[in-house]
Image (cartoon, rainbow, N blue to C red):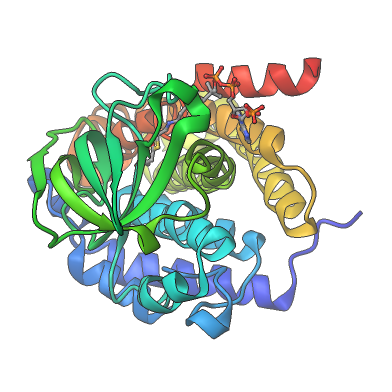
Length: 379
Ligand code: CAA
């Protein structure tokens, strides 16, 4: 066992850190305030190879490992969790499943463009009445000759309006329960596909979260991924990896808030000395640093297991469960270290505190992670 990052890992980390500082930091407060999608920044992320990091170079990807991906996620999330969730969804919920289970033709047609960030993808599982209870899909796809007719509504879709390619989970045979669920690649400009209202959110306000409506959308049979009935397994396996990305995002949010708090504590003086010289603040910094390091170990371990080809479903659930709690705890304390300044937008930590909350909700709530973990323990 060793805890050393390779030269390649360090280079990815450094590139992501520099990108976050030079391209994401300027304007992040305004984008949050105006709920503005970081379009130009995401375009540059694609040019730098952040949108398809783990995809095979044969499909225009970076051919990197999952450790590299979490390092980049962590650095970007320190500054802009709205940009990083776009990256996470594209990498681990869209490109990964398409590469692993898509046909050669699907990869040629869609993955090559997704991996470069030329187009962005979205993953459409949640519905108004199927959130945590993901087997209760109401969206249906009925076979009609050489195509399916897709009808239904999806909710809380990240990259909802900025995406061009959507992986849509739908019922193809309701009598079979979760074994009657399939997954389809749907293009935005197809007739009957409407991007619905944009959500006005507490955090990750730059990320565009929408509902989507499908009315008699014709989806060619060749756009189904895998066999009929494979959709639920596809969603679960994809989310196992997606949760590593969100765990890395939570880790980055926590680490970013900690770095802001540490720097501030050295500058701000009270009672004649920097507040970092007061034990009340020192203990906060010690707790933050310790829990962040523990979260980091869980996140890297889950990524490492995935790279080794081992089972990582429980490790990714543990990483997300713990890192998202750390993100909440640390960001709240970072605001506290800043005092009144922490409560205003200029100092960044109030945004990170708002951003942290979603990591306990999306890609499976903390309660769902506990179901996954306990099933792993008891099986
Ligand atoms: N990995 C692989 N397979 C899994 C799995 C996992 N983590 N969890 C369940 N499965 C498989 C089971 O083995 C079972 O397969 P078989 O029938 O072949 O044995 C099948 O899926 C059904 O499983 P269950 O009987 O356990 O189903 P359930 O209804 O009791 O519970 C659940 C399943 C784990 C609660 C699941 O519904 C779940 O994960 N829910 C949360 C959904 C979620 O994470 N949504 C996030 C939305 S996406 C998002 O947020 C993206 C974004 O935009 C940021």
